[in-house]
Image (cartoon, one colour):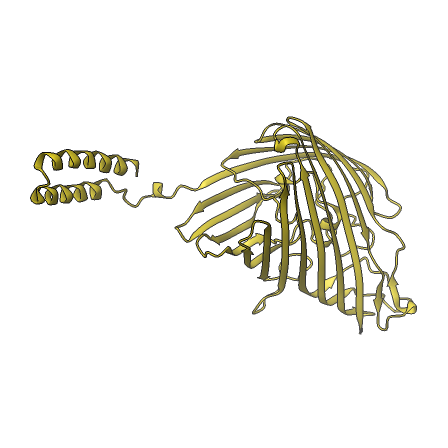
Length: 420
């Protein structure tokens, strides 16, 4: 490309001199123009493997965890949820390999391969994204992290703490990932306003990944934000997620009194979650390189309703409403050093079968899981981070524990900036 530009510039220079010498002779101009075209065709790059030049990045992460309770035990009242991903002792965390490139003027492509601590590679993200739809419209197709909430579409290496808040761990199994289509619209206004919608397969927890025609889940979200001078900025959002669950099994639902054989714990029905999120950032004189404070919070409410199969023979209507929220603040108090504090709380609700009356309550723990986490991290550069995290976890009734985490996150190669 550069050779072609240089060749053209040189020839144009020669052309201008020749034109002056020939006093605008038409024959001379036509001959020089043909010569320029021939040389440009020779200099044009041919199709080869080097013509495709993607940006490649590798994130290396590792963690040491000292835990007092088996991490596979779920939070009380959330038996259908997987554990939040903790592993005792040393592990490599979730390292990832990212590839991105412009495909053509119309589309870009992105792929992220996650390197599992247990070994093996999985496709975390793999999607194409439009570049030229215009009018603030953006289309994404493939496998992606949903745009609901604030934290969901951030990759693990961009989290402010070692782990996700309890509400993400229990309601979304850390993150809601889908195979589907996402459409977003950015309003042409001075104040940031974004609307988005998604339809997908429904493979992400709490959905059930089954073969079906059509969509298995749907998401709607909206975000509004602005700057206040050069020192303050804010964003608020709302989201709604709905999916289907088919034959979801839980071993944690207590047996119904008098039921021979207990509850077989097979649930089929709808799962609908509504959420609110907000974030506020402040940096003196707008200089985020030296000091800044970020405060964020999210709240989700999930209602599941459908049919519970129990007593091996009996089907009955089932419903439960569960909530969770967190609030956290992270402050960079001097260049390269940050400190953060986070508080999580869950409410497992009261699960009922049949008519909504006290006699049919099958799950009412009278206990709300909580956790408080503190972290300190040091980033010598934008490519490396070392972190210490301490937590007092009381998410499992009668099993409180103290947790200690040491983590490193290192970035190599080209890696794009993260969202607000």
